[in-house]
Image 1 (cartoon, rainbow, N blue to C red):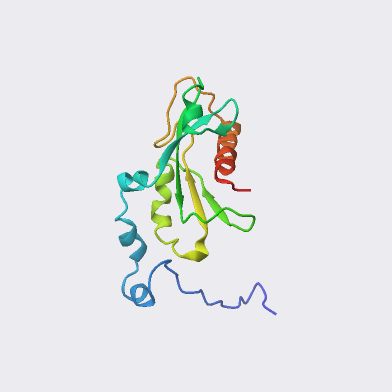
Image 2: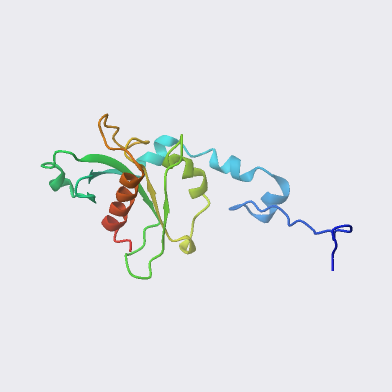
Length: 158
């Protein structure tokens, strides 16, 4: 039994670089940074779209419905590896950080490929990234949670 006066040495595990081959890990300690540097914000946002969100009804609208709603804002959302919706479909939601919004996840997303990663929803809150930035909007934590739930509902995520 180890004591405080004589600690037992513990071997630290080797560092793991996601998405890199064993050879790349052995020859280059910065593989993730080099691979991720190829993502541009223009390319990231081109793979998503802006969708109409009604904060009063707390739902994502179809484009036709959005024309008549007075307080609708456009929010950016990007879906990667979308699977057919079903009760066993696994989704991961990536919420925006500051200051880079959903684009901050671009470096991570490059390494999340293949069937086992599941579907991924990347969202921008109102006022962030490629979403609208209205001046007199009721920004807040509850409003952001309502938006994320509306995005989940629009995609059939339960």
